[in-house]
Length: 393
Image: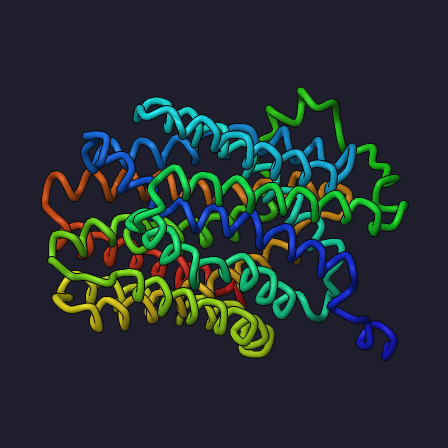
């Protein structure tokens, strides 16, 4: 029994996987504050901003079952290469100065993100030692979130720089995704051949996998992940518009503070969820998110925004590692690709739904009402956790 305990976490596969995910997530972090400003500069409304962000979520959700089955039958790392390559190529369309072109580009990015995420979660489940899944999930989600430390601030700086502009940001986004695709190419050479040779009579033709959208074993993990991320657009994307309304300058520091908190918290809190249990970790997550969003609604200075962002990111960090660990524990080995694809649907779906909700609420009741409503949604996640306390024990 002692042998499994000594299994290393930071294998070449895990390290390369984290590297590829970093570059893909860094591109996403770079574009999160860019798209709202870009669309409004083209004359778009907050509701149109929500539509652009939702296009990313729609395609990411629709194509994920197919991509999960494809990863099971072909190669997880190969799917990652394809996804990151599409993330790079899709941004080229953003150079066309029309909101509709950006919608189409973001829809293509959604497909690329679906491939990168489904393949990444499947490889994580394969490479993480069973007794260290919470810790592995913390490091993995921490690497994904590390781009949020500087990339949003870099995007805002590049947009306003004398030599910069939106086009410069798009070039950097293309380079980041291309680096991720190159890292995934190296990853394909590191994966043991037995992973590619898995056989399972439970996996049907690709067209049948499209119809089998949900893997029931991890629905609870998916619902909890959705509940903890659905308010994220209010913090990640709409906050730049909120700060502009409040006449708060240097908002890039908000992203630095919240991103730093996220990257530091995720590895530590992943270990915590292994020790205190998944239920307690999720309770802490939703309490922190609710308090953070209420504070955001009443904020009037940069320091208040930064404190709220830090609180929110601590809660999100706890949720990300905990729900991912639950999903890995529930996924069947022979259908791991589809199971993790089902789980990974929650993230883009929550971002798309959240973006539409936030954009609509801003137009109807303003930013104050939007943030209070988002706090109520986070409290709903707390109720779901309490209602399922027996299954999460």
